[in-house]
Length: 210
Image 1: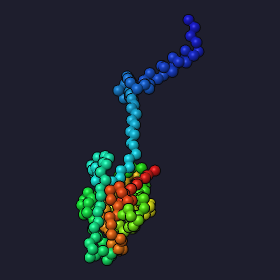
Image 2 (image 1 turned 30 degrees about the vertical axis):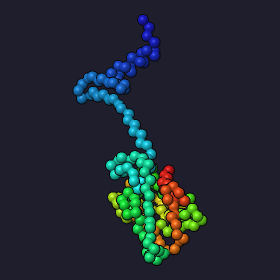
Image 3 (image 1 turned 90 degrees about the vertical axis):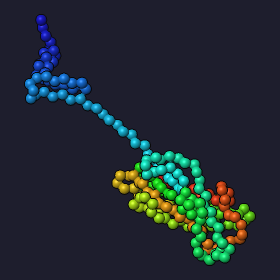
Image 4 (image 1 turned 60 degrees about the vertical axis):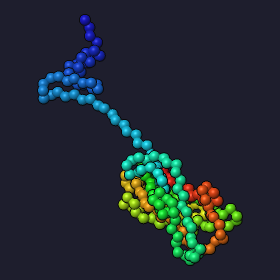
């Protein structure tokens, strides 16, 4: 029986390498010092981008529970008639920490974060009078993070940007206590300025990342 050259070559290779295994279920036999078998598994982990911003009432962020919370806090100032316009800051009421103090936090995992604040304009009394948002100050103090989260300076319109620089890990976890005060450096006409979603009362904080 004639055996083709191709078949002869195949048989020669097979005879020379009897212990070669390359499938993902392998068996090798032979002398104890010459055998070996391999199998492989490939793993993939997909991590989503996260960007969490909290100002005031919100979910926990130090335990990994990053949840939405629709509560919007209200801060109220009521300077007394005897000190109106004397330049002494007036403390507020309200806030999730009370006395005009809010919890502020950013958690992210994709590089630098830019934070700013936007208003629709000066606080109005609905009768043509106004108080500039520059009269509302924000003082930052430490909360749980090593570096306190800085607050944008409120203005009539969009504030300047606060840039949070991410470390090499690209993960940012920063928080602070933001204490709001009324600068009380002017004497406005009598009236109630702002309110609940009224007379330009609302400040919108926005965080963005790549």
